[in-house]
Length: 543
Image (cartoon, rainbow, N blue to C red; front, side):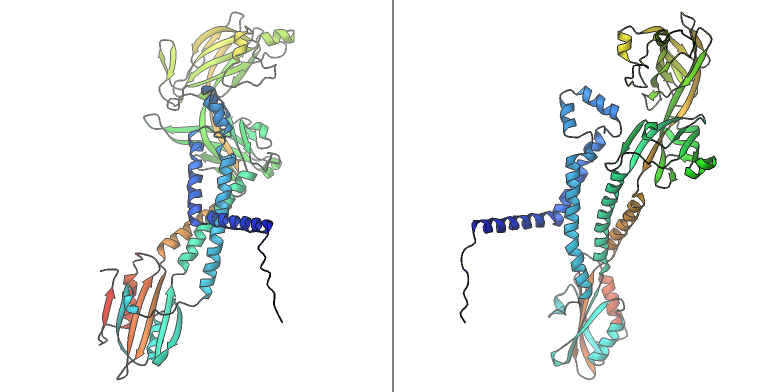
């Protein structure tokens, strides 16, 4: 029966399909090579550099706005390139995803090959063992079968394969150190797991910062993002359904060195979990830097502190208001701080809403925990609360509280001042207990200052897995560095007068493995020093 073969050339569409598959296959091979994985890992580290050098919007929006305002030309371009949101940018995400694909595509074939090597027998004995870096030859009494049995007893823990050769010759192949590749794979797959766990934490976690004045007051409860001064959620959560807990700050203590550098921050707090809120009980905890309060998957960190000056404003009708509000530390060394307070008159002080609005009091200025005056200019010489004082401007008028326009808690609305709706009444330096009286009889008294704690609440559902993968990654790295992959071979020839000629050779799978002493130990076990034989040993690693 005749067979016909279709020798027609492929059509244009078929050639295009073949070319497209070839291009995709080549690109996939390039992406999944170890060289590409290393390049992507380097690019990921390089891409993280702007996130460390530039202010990030998710951490400090005001710093980003100030950075852009100071660079009207370059700032908007950098913002378009998402340099102020590095870890959520499209280009960082692209490198991140490509690294995932490269690692998975690179490691999966290696895992398959390692599984095959575990099932395969050790390789056959080389033809000439004398060419190996480590080798030895000599004679041993007994038949080849007897000698091979004795050698096998010295190779416990080695994978062995006994093979016969012509003329009664026996060969033995032995390998050890397969765990090295297992440790290497464990390290790389743990790295993938670590990256996945971090990504899950960023997707489903949240992070919020809140300032709590240390006076054992109401504190805050983790019920809504609105209670936080700054709040950032992952891409797959909106901040609803927060795990309820409440925190009160009893006190704050900062230990300083003689040069003013902070040595340790400590804050005694009380907290309630969901069950405690129902029962109405509080638990005590001492919060320190790097020693967070852990409530399930939530962590409460002590990240900073500052001072909240307290003022009492007594209006002409005798009613008064007292308020303490945090000031922003402008000098991290001396904690010279700036801020502003706004006082709305109590009900009944003024007859109409317009009079009440024009009777608001605003205070803006500087606070020094350890005051130092140069004439009337205030500065601070130490960050500890030793000799507090303020230098403030006092205003009266419409502070803008009723306009609904967002304002900074650290400064007054300059437009209100420029429009004459908020008029300066006095500029004064005050120490605790001192006061000043305005022209309409309003008394402004500086009562002192309280310390506040800056708390950061973070939720990461994958934090335990991050720890697990970090531990397994370091374990795999240690295994791959400590364990050596090595092979040893024996060939036994039948000899005369009841003796056999034995050739022994060894080879490490890695350069400069340094397993020569182990080879010599094994040799001395097979050829004890009391054995009388004509032997020859070479160690090319030590020559």
